[in-house]
Image 1 (cartoon, rainbow, N blue to C red):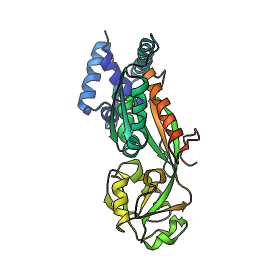
Image 2 (cartoon, rainbow, N blue to C red):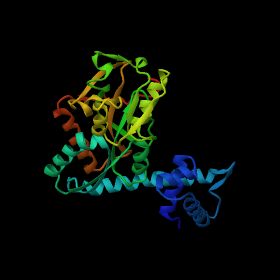
Image 3 (cartoon, rainbow, N blue to C red):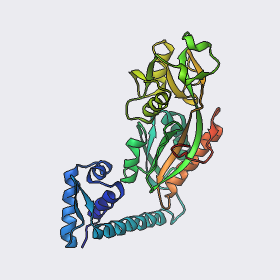
Image 4 (cartoon, rainbow, N blue to C red):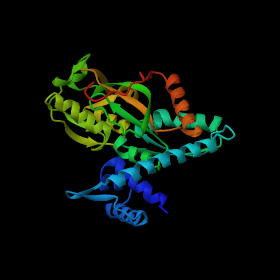
Length: 313
């Protein structure tokens, strides 16, 4: 009999394209993935992977088995969904990942709504740097939903098994100290911002990479001298005249000592909830609904257009 956990490992290799990428998604080592596949091959009585350069690829039989495992996973998820809907209630654990800024702005009030309306949901949440960190946790079933961002200057491509529910669009502005020479501008062209020290989120996060990408498109190499996980800390640095930063207006509006300048060309950030494909559980549906309500009542929020921008658009 074929072991289900080993089948799930093989399906993950098929989805991510390599042993290393599958290991990262499953939070295990590459040798551990290889060992599970070898055991599965012994159970199947045939080769499921074959050498390709310095790595491996699935054999024809491997692809057939992986697709069957993926279909089985979908049916199991549907069965779990049906079980939770037996009495029409949203119940059980709900594991959420969120950006640092979205945790405070959107998720916290949404969790309050869930506690009032769905007391049988048991939520847990963790903050993260962006899609690169959290989407693998979603696909490996370590998280049930993640709140991620998409910058129009560097759109994020989602794996096929991820469904997105855009929530809100934020204008991105250049934040400078109120005493900064650029503070007298009504609007700033990004090509004008040269020779500045910058504040940003850590390397690898969506904010950091998007900021570097858009400035490099204007032939400006960003000198990131101050790295902080959250926008309030960055704005403290900006207010002190030590750096400038590109930031979503909604995350930094009203910060004392900071002037926010509209930028040209326009840059936007879209916040969305990412969930796995298939039928969402009642708890996940309740979370998406609660987040949409938060967007409707928070001042200064623009509900998302419903479109997740593709690269180049």
